[in-house]
Image 1 (cartoon, rainbow, N blue to C red):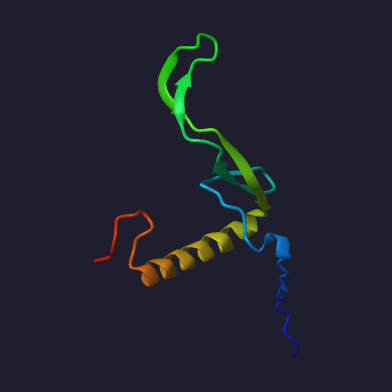
Image 2 (image 1 turned 120 degrees about the vertical axis):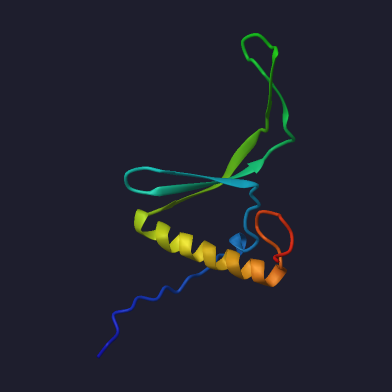
Length: 106
């Protein structure tokens, strides 16, 4: 009996092999897809200023730019979450560190 399993043969173009550095990701959704915006800081944070008065607001602002936007169907979000969890667990085992930066595991 023939298998109905679908396997992807993925090709990574050489110009994308290095990847794109990102400092954080923003996740949001529409009715049809989940969107992951990967963001890189453009410069260090500066004191926030009220645009109309020019007075400091007490906060800080870090200019940033979306360096990559990825849209995935809702069905794939569960697979992505599972894959991220598996890779994070493996990374923690391999490095002896926790992703929250708390140091070595007990």
